[in-house]
Length: 180
Image (cartoon, rainbow, N blue to C red; front, top):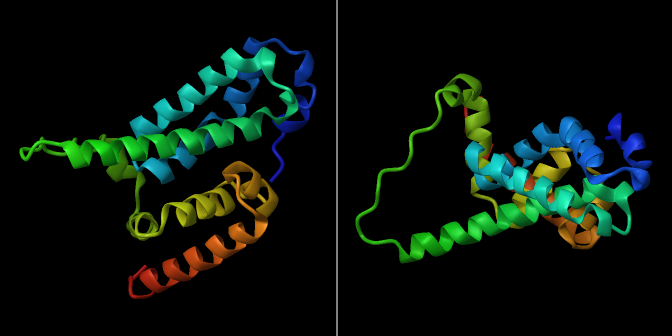
């Protein structure tokens, strides 16, 4: 999927950090937040993850070897930061006291935005392995090629194909019985 902004980003080498990040933010913030939501399952956390990725890009802009690849860097940063959030949650869950606070209530717009079908698909996605979930989110949500997914996740194209195939098969099996 080619975005209108990507040709402009190829000229980014001469841009200052403020301009480059502003252009990337305007064009890709929403898409990156949605990617992170699929991984961390929380809109507020996903927005923080993406914001942190943009802040890091801004701070490192002058040291980027290939500024025209800034979007790929951002995608990888969002996936890696989302993984860190999930690891942190696991540590917190393992070490939490017996008395737990009730889960925070979802924001008011979530029920209005999420249909039954989307909820069923998201629930099914949560049962997949982390890697399958990442590959499917990058493939079907961001419409990335196998090569782009492999680069973003740091795995081979064959591994991308394998995770995508197994993840899609598991989703089909899980959603088969759903009345969607």
